[in-house]
Amino acid sequence: MLQIQGFVFNFASENTYILYNDNKNAWLIDPGNMNEQETKAIEGFISENGLNIRKILLTHAHIDHVLGLQWAFDTFKVPVHMHQEDQEVLDMLQASGMRFGFSVDPVKADTVYVNEGEELELDGEKFKIYHVPGHSPGSVVYHNETQKFMISGDVLFEGSIGRTDLYKGNHEQLISGITHKLFILDDETQVFSGHGNPTTIGFEKQYNPFFK
Image 1 (tube, rainbow, N blue to C red):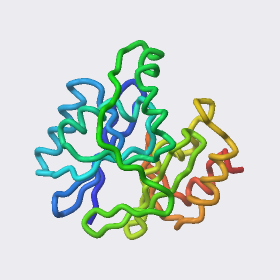
Image 2: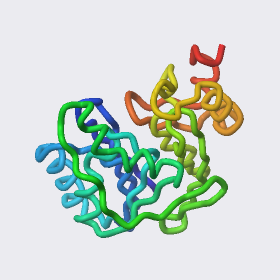
Image 3: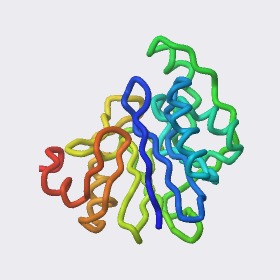
């Protein structure tokens, strides 16, 4: 049985997730911790539950989702899984930090690129990968069909979608990706977004104003 623990971090109220199972094996998704207090929150949860971080996953590489990435890689020494199209976004981290008024060092980590149609496994539990660009060029969604949930990053939110006025954003591309890749899934599928509350595919199909 998979469980999800969420943390709300940094200036953007970003959702960082730890996904874990009964064997105590876990994935750390979008580590956005940016200060000692936030890092201690993650460390405390991992320690208290005796978890082993096996992978670091990125839904995309915008600054608010990767502020703790170097710490995560240095601490757990496991590869970072992300889409290759967002490598250039990650490479702009220093410049992004300057725009927000603080300094960030470039990330140096071992990277594994994931692609549409591939699957990742956590002790036999499979996650399908959907490439849904438009918010960022390499935005991906991780979907577990068995337990009917997905980690959507900033692709789809409760009542909203990711902003498309950022670097290489594309509104039509994002709408199309959500419609043809996510809205065809089971209505009961839970959506754990990069910001805000969880929602479901069925709710968003019916009430999300971007799809009226």
